[in-house]
Length: 210
Image (cartoon, rainbow, N blue to C red; front, side, top):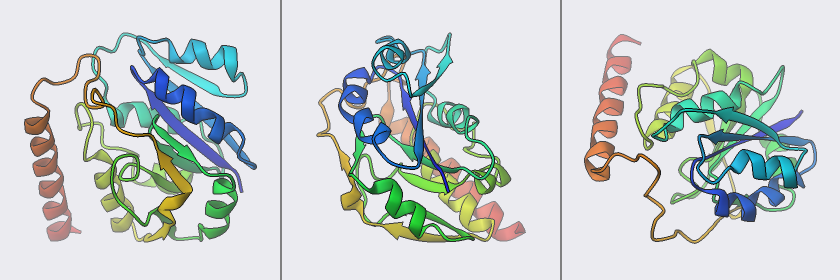
């Protein structure tokens, strides 16, 4: 089994500098960094300092769209790869890849056994299962709730949700500007509520129609 880390970055190069080393050092793994029109030039920095990282350049974006960015990164996984989605500000403990590769059984996907920044968006699944549910829903604008929506889709497809120790991940302390991204929607709270309402509506339709 092979683990493919997918990390996205738009204005989070300082975080990537601190976390990506913990990913490229994992055995039986590779790392894809999505430079989502990052004003800090995250892709250029990765090519210079970590040439083993595969960079996906997305040009011309003025707003971060988490679903689109993660889908583009996951598209680089191949064959029987297992995909691990992590935020730019989340590092992995030594041995993380060995643990999740050993724990991921057929018919399952993995999430941390804790919640909070850097944990709510972490998810490990087979690329084939990710493709079967058509990945992240691109209708989510900006970011937030798209990861919870993917978990719902994976469960609805018949997979069992299992957990790995949240202690295997180390989110960086959240900075004061953590919610500020280039071109972000001004009313963040309103946008999140729209996303939650959309996700609940999808779940209700799925429950009624199967």
